[in-house]
Image 1 (tube, rainbow, N blue to C red):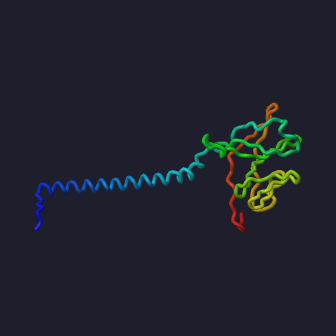
Image 2 (image 1 turned 180 degrees about the horizontal axis):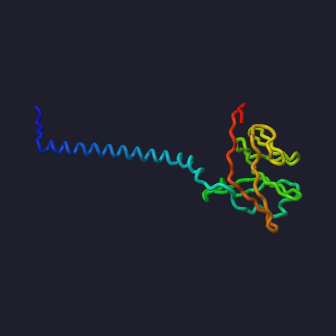
Length: 184
């Protein structure tokens, strides 16, 4: 026989304590689960939703050099700050473009292939732009002429203020992903 005796007063206290302990454990479990879900979901939600809330349109004018830095007929690779870049972006906020000073006008092309976003390279002799990733080729005006890219290189604005050359950056469109053999 057991020596333990439960008085009616003690049994009532255990019953009232049990549900509160159970509620506490359930609350802790739900709270820690919600905290873990928020910690895992925040970076994903931010990555998905952040581009929708960024300001689009043209960026500001940025100084890229002087007239002496751009001989007529020569294409020069310049660095600029991507519009909408965060201050903590470091080198990621920097971007590049090819700028050509032509008799009477200027041409600035963002050097990102419109297929998958690889940087294109300018070949001085032919004047063509080549994408080393998948063989995309653009002519001297940045128009896609061979390979998988479906749209031309993005043009950027150029202006001269006194002796200073400025580049107008813009919101960068996403490259177009196409499957091999797929129709556009």
